[in-house]
Length: 416
Image (cartoon, rainbow, N blue to C red):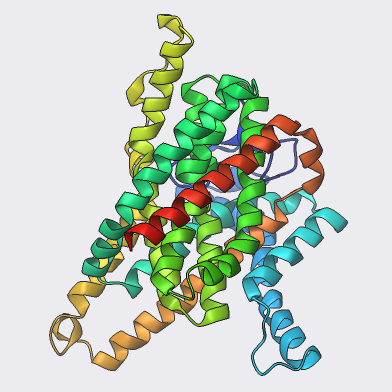
């Protein structure tokens, strides 16, 4: 599938542009070295001048979208605070800055529309800013804590993945949804949202419409879960921060949506643990991409008797698709935190107060980056595209979200 540079960026129906799957988000890579010579560049004589010229061009291309998404994050926080405290008279605003940022993004995209100049920066927010925000969460946890959360979440993660894949695939056959479309929705629901859909679509040779519909379904119901699950989970688990985090990390589809839901819960209920548990649990789910995607490819090829010449090799994934780099960064920073916490002086040289300030600052940056990425999700969501979905795909998407959510709630309740 070739890139469609003439089409506006839309998180629902843009999978044909995806060329890199080294993270959870499936957005295209902008490579400034691959573009044609820029105006004025041919007049430059040295290589460093050309690189600098291209660097400025890259900044100019990315700035509008990045600045807009960051502005939505800032305005969302200010607006939530103003409405909650000044307008409604609460001592602490009941509105979430994350929720306001998403709503503002949706309003801008669907009421005013966005010029093409903003698209590359929005992709960068979803591809890089989100990764950095998730990775920085690792600095808030020790490697021991990450390991404990991961092992604790593992049974719930495995069962939810198995339930989603087999039950959703079965339901798809019952309503006679195309087999590849059903498989894509099942994988996107069970593991890693958009990127899992694209990877599986390539392995099964799904066409562009099937991938587009699957992306739309996963994004739609993940967005609904983002708005509702933090409050539902608080009620279901009676405010138990760890249980809520396990539920959010296994019941919501995409990493950006999980991070946003965990962040909303933290801001509403003053529970940083929930965000940490939800993010770690979701990263454990992401690790299963390297197992589930080849399995789904082989299953489809055998079930539908794909000819040998048309089969896609099982080990077509790059290492960065088996283990996303942002996940490595998360664990590396958790390890750094563990080393820094050893002894009276972090790393033997830093004052404890300075180390604590670094951790506090990284937490604030992580929250801002995550909010920026979620604002970019709103800015990239064109709701008018939903009319392209058939009722069968919507029913399967709703069933998948309900089944995985129910399985997650049942397991967390029974096991912990």
